[in-house]
Image 1 (cartoon, rainbow, N blue to C red):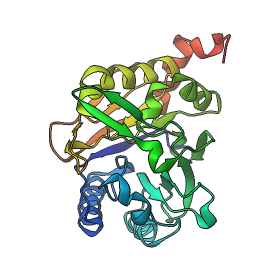
Image 2: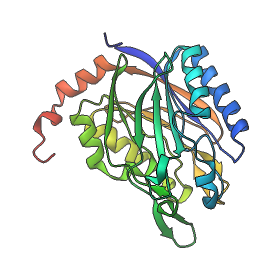
Image 3: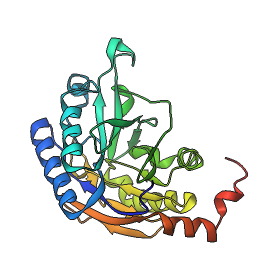
Image 4: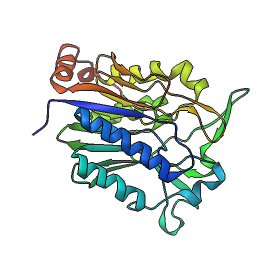
Length: 274
C-alpha cells in the first residue's frame, strides 16, 4: 500500500576529500532527519568524496562495497528510504573504459539497494572567468532512465546536470514517477542563473514532487557550489529552501494533493510529443 502523506528531507553538504569525515557528517544529518520523522532522506551528489579529478578512479568503490554497506546500515537502523545522492562507482574489468560511473543509489528500510542510476549527462563546460569542468575525462555516462516503485510512491532518479535535459524527466514521469530526486553539486555561476528556475520547471511541467539537495560552498577543485537546496511541489511551489550552510531541510509529500493537481490541470493527458 502506498503511503499518501509523509515527511521527506534533503541534506545540503560541503563535501571534502576525507571519506571517513564525510560519512560521519552525512550520518549525523540523516539521523537528524530521522529524529524529526522523515521517511525519505536524499543526500547530494558526490557526498562520499570530492577531490582532484585525477584521483577519482583511485577513490571509486565497488557497489556493493564498504561505503554502501554503511549506508545500508543507516537505512536499516533508522527505518527509512535513503537516496545516496551519488558515489563514484568502480567497475569490474574496465567495462567503463577505465573510467568510473557517477551513481545514485536508493536503499529501502531493510538496507537493500532497490535503485541504481548512473548519471547520463556529463558536465563538460568552459565558462570563461567562472569554471572549466570536464567530467568525461574520468567518468563514463550511464545509458538508462530509472524509476523505482516504493510504498512512498514511484521515485525517478536523476543527478545534477541531468536537470538541463527535460526529455529525461518526461520519460520518468511517463514511467510513473511521482517524486523526482536531483542530488547535485551545481556550480555557483550556473546555479545563480538557472538552479531554482530549472528545478521548479521540472516540477511544473511533470506535476511531480522534486527533492534537490545541493553541495554548498568551496569544493576541493577550487570552484564554489551554489547550495540553495530545494523541495518543490507538483504546482512548482518551493516547500523548503536551504540557507547558505550545511543543513537538512524538510517538506511533506502529499500524493493526494499531487493527484488533485494532475486531475484539475490534466496536461500529462494531453502530451503529443513524448
